[in-house]
Amino acid sequence: MTVLSGDDTVMATRTDGFGSAELTATLRTGRIDLVHTGLAHPGAWDAAPRGVRP
Image 1 (cartoon, rainbow, N blue to C red):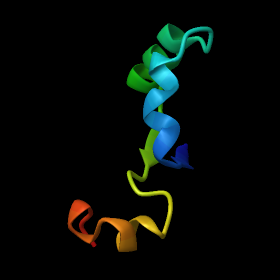
Image 2 (image 1 turned 135 degrees about the vertical axis):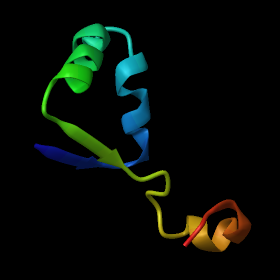
Image 3 (image 1 turned 180 degrees about the horizontal axis):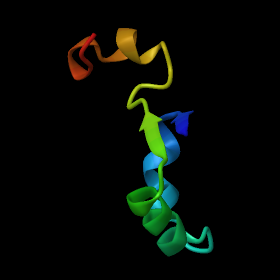
Image 4 (image 1 turned 180 degrees about the vertical axis):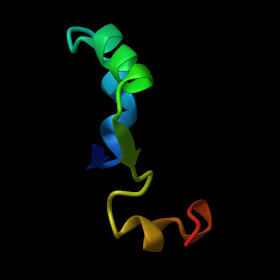
């Protein structure tokens, strides 16, 4: 299974009360690909063009 998400996904394994240990273990051992973007808002291209790679 592939899961696509926005830039806040990186915090999922660091959030208290979210089952972070279980989530981390599942992502490491399960057949799940977690794909996220570091750039979730199209305005970021204009605000900081050197901060992102096309």
